[in-house]
Amino acid sequence: MMKPTALAVLSVLTFSLLAIPGAFAQYSRHAYGPEQSFVVGVAPLSLMLRSGKFNVRGEWAYADNKSLSVIIGIPRRSKVPGWFLNDIEVDENGKTTTNDFHSLGVIIENRFYLGSEALRGFYLAPYARYNRIWLTHTSENPEQQGDIRITGAVGGAGLGAAAGWQFRLGERMRLDLTFLGIDFKWLRGTLTYANSNPNNDIEAFRAKVEEAVKDIPLIGKKLTPEIENNEIKVRTPGWVLPAYRFNLTVGYAF
Picture (cartoon, rainbow, N blue to C red):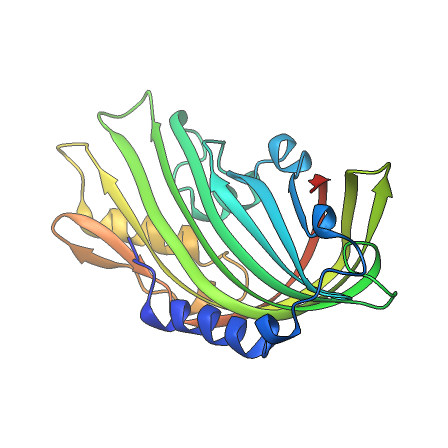
């Protein structure tokens, strides 16, 4: 599995520091009162989707119309999304016995509210993000001995910009909607295929894996499965992908 790289961490930290120059010098809370300088919230949709994570958000208004928002995707167990599993599964007739999918995400935004105060109204926000997903999928074929186990992880960092609106629902409650977020992410990862059948032909198995992964969008034709210790390793090259982001959180201001 791929560990978070120093490049990914450095990208997030550098962008965050550059995006909020002089934040402490500009810090002013007189326009909205100390009791309205912070918002904490949760994203209910993240519990209903196969995202492999549960999103929580915190926001700090460090100036009259500026804030720093951090969204953390806490890993939770869910099923591997079908659109992804279909591109990596070797045996379509196999019976799934394990199907675990987890995801970790961190998004740091520097928000600029176009109104007179932060934590309210329309905002624009440059942001940095880090994502990592990992999975374990096991399937068995009733006609054969053993099972096929797929494990792997993909991770990377990106930069982008978002637009959204934060609504006040009473004195303390907030509804935050990021309706447009576009970024470019650098990703890299590894998939490992293992067949526990004692009569497994490793070369034939490698050919099956190669046939399966070639359908992965954009990079499938660049993947070359290799045999390592009686397993098949598929390492992705580093590649940059565009992504769209939507987020809805319900929060409490204090």
